[in-house]
Image (cartoon, rainbow, N blue to C red):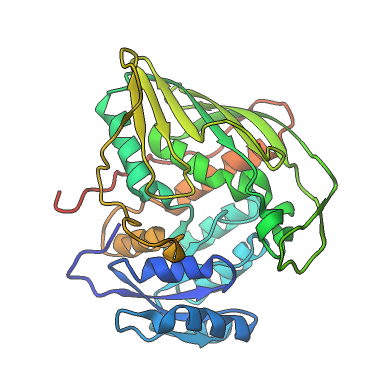
Length: 378
């Protein structure tokens, strides 16, 4: 997840200084192999505010606000991190690739699978690396769960369940419109965390059967600092799906903006010898639990790598950035875990879930199961 100690840090520029940019600035400041040097946005005031919030970059690196064109033209910036809204992911990533940059984009890699295929092809033609969120499976929870699966402790993994429930965005986000447009929705907004976690644990998906529907066509916004009063819904808001993995595991998946209250788990795996409970995959470091058939209760699993967020106060959370460091390390020869093949496969699965036409679909893409993250000193 980090570049070799002998490698010089790769300079990184962020394009898009909205809600998630602070999490990237905080996370990149804690990671080796990368240094955040510039922030850009179509709104220059927003870029300047992002630099101010980041305190100038920390760790001795100057951090500056730039125009998008100036950032793309800067020869010292090796990686562009695309934090624009999903509808602009393909356009901005294409511009960065054309400028000779390696690109890491927020999820999804593009608003549609068709756009994503084009971007992946463009990256290959440009001989540049393309990476995409989510990267949270690189954290201690995802890697600890992976170690349990790989150890054989659960036996053969027969089934899995994943429940993506409402993020209550209408209550806290000033303008959550993008979540209810193409590129958003429960499948493409929160779903990437869950499907990426499952592919990390179980390998690629072979087929998807899904049924989707919508709830209210117009939804009110309640956030105290809201800039819009209501949202017109353009995508399905509730999907139930069955995923069959190449390994033979069958997963039951719910992705919904209609489930406001529930007593459901986040992710669970069911093996012939026991079960594994995995915390919210939107986070890096919460507790993984295991219960073998003969056990009287669930047992906490010791993390296999150091938690990224250990000891941090709440005002320093959330963090993002390990996927950017993963890309930087790949430039020095390490395996890329959040790469284009992985992101494209995850998006095809998610788009098929969201489409939900009640017909079984065979996946046209596949990917390698990401390499585990080695513990420090291993």
